[in-house]
Length: 152
Image (cartoon, rainbow, N blue to C red; front, top):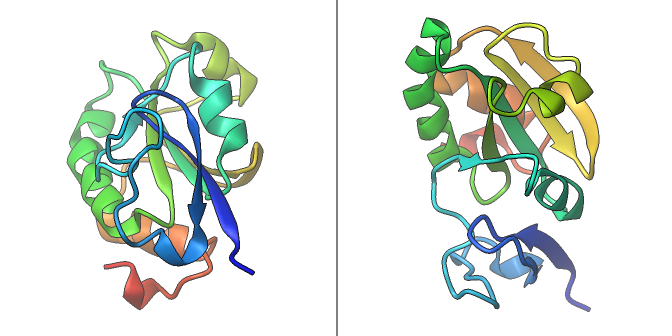
């Protein structure tokens, strides 16, 4: 019997059922037909956060950041590079704490940048401060079913 992974499309927010053995094959959304993984972090807001956050079976890494934060801006390129290495075993997202203060408050974000790994609505780990892509990949690999060498 084939196992199925639920993944939320970052384009139309539809929940897709993807056979686990096909997750590496660049799946497309059944509703909007766009790629589910773009190798770029998804911008989340109050309007789409819960759907993306609770309905996906794969871990989600969220970068809580602010546009006035120099370390946040310097880490943006490293975070995008990490998305290339970590997808499709993780979905990466970004939340601007200035435009989405309710989400930041909900998770007790007190400093930026802060990275959090969530799975099915539960926080697994948190990392504070700007880091490079290699550090993000190494940190995340501890919460995946795959070996770190396969991520890069």
